[in-house]
View 1 (cartoon, helix red, strand yellow):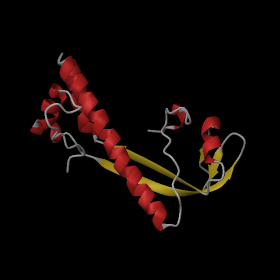
View 2 (tube, rainbow, N blue to C red):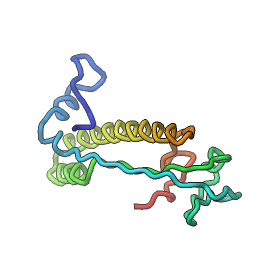
View 3 (cartoon, rainbow, N blue to C red):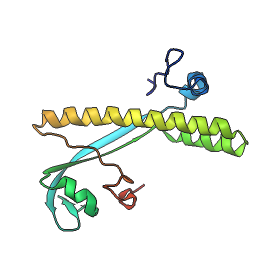
View 4 (cartoon, one colour):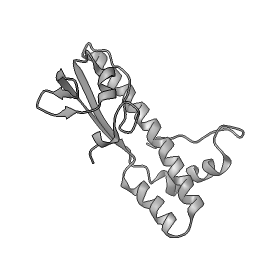
Length: 151
């Protein structure tokens, strides 16, 4: 199932060119959405890191302020799959810069929508555990240094 439904009426928020490209069957086929998340118990929060049971550490001084009092941390990832990025690169390499930029924008929006679906799923899972979920923090946000992201 595609992450995005681009069936937007004329005059909608999405420019016509993006809508037309997103509607192409070949573009829809690029989407291979996948995600995973896991709940991690917090062992402690020190002056410069959050330590999880098992020894993993999150070092982000700004982010730690938001996490004070947390008993659990949920770490998650989501992707549209590698084919999307390969297609964007191929378009750039072929000199199809506009198509590459439009595909990149469509992919970015699709990834945001997928992330929102993952967040909703995490919130439901937290409620089932009797927990309340806080806000989302992404690597590169003001609260979490991009160096905390591992690939």
